[in-house]
Amino acid sequence: MSILVLVRNFVPAHDQARAGEWNVADLARNSFDLEGKVVGTVGCGRIGYRVLQRLAPFGCKELLWHDYADIPESELPISQHLEVMRLMVGAKSGINARRVESLEEMVAQCDVVTIVSTVSPRPMPYSHM
Image (tube, rainbow, N blue to C red; front, side, top):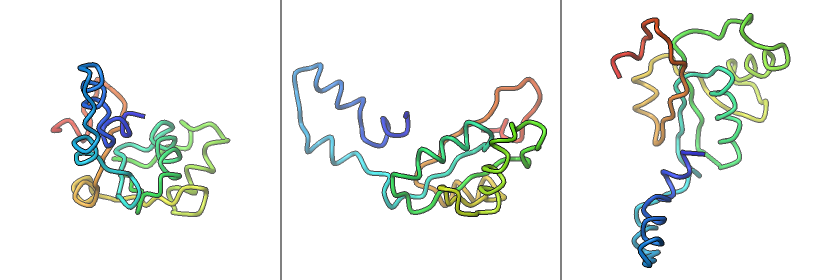
């Protein structure tokens, strides 16, 4: 998971190891755990939902999600529809995530943000990013 690579400072650790160095104190100073952090995802389709599922065991303080539109029922397999609906209403489904209406509001609350959005030729609300 790319989030873990970034927050645990993996790339600098890898570079140090390849150079024959290993300064654990320096690496630890610039890394952190997801435990107690607020993590948000932009986009909550199939992949965004799975990202939230995989983040749940890390003890995040809160999981947030923002999507520019509700997820149309027709685009989801029946097996995932109930899971996503539970997520959308905040029900306990193994994931306790909260939808945030405004992207700016979500980003302001998060320690970590992941973008899980489709690449599309049509203009998207996030095209200014």
